[in-house]
Image 1 (cartoon, rainbow, N blue to C red):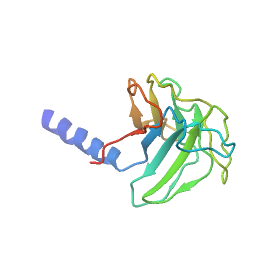
Image 2 (image 1 turned 60 degrees about the vertical axis):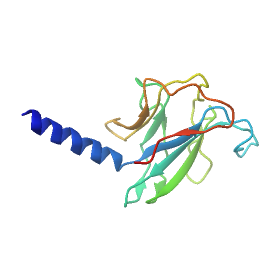
Image 3 (image 1 turned 135 degrees about the horizontal axis):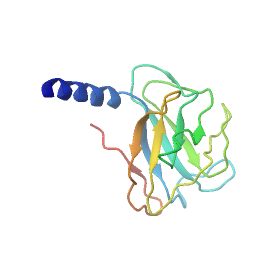
Length: 145
């Protein structure tokens, strides 16, 4: 029984490594990347490491573990091995074909950050309980495995 649980857990981790993820983010963007308004908003980079295109419709980003659907993506296709930057500006813009902005900002002292699947709100990528303190113009991200 224990052996089966280990195999199931390993398969689950393997499956999760091949799904959309938060690849990198910057919580104190002062001079690195300006948004369409000329402001240096925080940003989050989403990555599709899979061999399939993924429709982001219904996927969500959040800075609150208990609210996985805090900001929901519009109908956008993220192709295999493609990256997408979403500004965490608090401007709440989610129109396909336009620059994307969450309805929350990132905290420089660290907080929860998660990417959740549509419908069941399961997190496929998260920094929990919180990412570490962040510094100006230095991004933070995942190690490639």
